[in-house]
Length: 248
Image 1: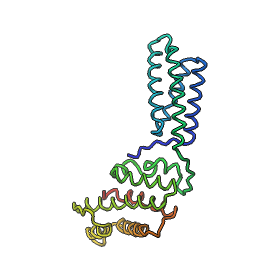
Image 2 (image 1 turned 60 degrees about the horizontal axis):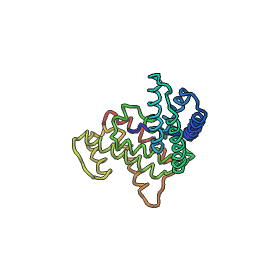
Image 3 (image 1 turned 30 degrees about the vertical axis):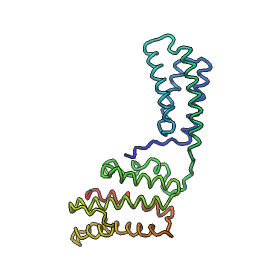
Image 4 (image 1 turned 30 degrees about the horizontal axis):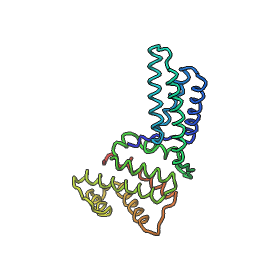
């Protein structure tokens, strides 16, 4: 999970330039080589699902014309096909303009590099650690990253803490082979502590106790998380995952 592709503002500008470039090439009856080269550039549209239709149709055209060239067909594109492709390009431009109205640009102000948050878990956890997480846990942490990017700090911290609680339950179940169902965080934490002799009790249990306190604090209706708290909790949970490797 969390193999995310992002299309930055520069990607949107490039897509617009590719549409105009293709329009000009077709109007000027340019070579098939130039047309194919420009069609191949539309793979950028895969990064955002809103533009997937453009990518798919450009790929169909690219495959058709590439096959014609490979077979040495003359001409590789007929006059009627050139007109059809011109019509498609015009439709792609209209679609792109409509879909761009649905996009919103944010300017994150974070201590964690926005690029890392956009790329998600792969920039924070090695693959072997990500494999320890369920899709739900990965989804919670990915959502926390997204919330920080748009300044939803309380939501971000809550999602990080939800992932931490899932890790606690997973650890307890592996240690005791007992499922406590919907028992609250504090109950599960106490039972996990009891599962270890006091002198051999892992320090991560204390860290989970701290995170529980954070969860209790932000659950109060008059309490909101600061950007620093949201980022600190996210990074604490990432550190917790690394520390819990042998227990999960």
